[in-house]
Image (cartoon, rainbow, N blue to C red; front, side, top):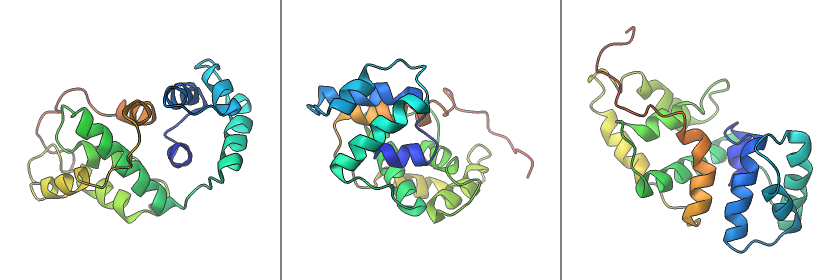
Length: 170
């Protein structure tokens, strides 16, 4: 899951220590995970990449394709929002829309990208059904601290309060 988030550009090198700490707390005792947990938030890819690669090799983890990646991230964010609801309409649509550019290879992300424009103008009422569908995606079954650590970078892109209703250039 962390590799999927990294592939989407959501997990920066400095986010790995938080994720590693949450994995340690859940009983993962890989030496690479322990070393990642000890790094500072200013760590660079030079520090984290070899450790992440070694841990992935040990567990046979491959980076999934773009469509699968977006699906995994969507399920992660649905788990996070079920545990900690957001203060804005359409949080899943807003979050997944960020995964569409530049390639638009994921149908799910592209659909969210198209819907996001209408979230704050009141003319996208049918998108609320789509949002409800997104929030009921199957759980990944990860422990909550791991979900929070993985979700934090993407969740930080959400508005903290509901944006005003109005048309944005349509």
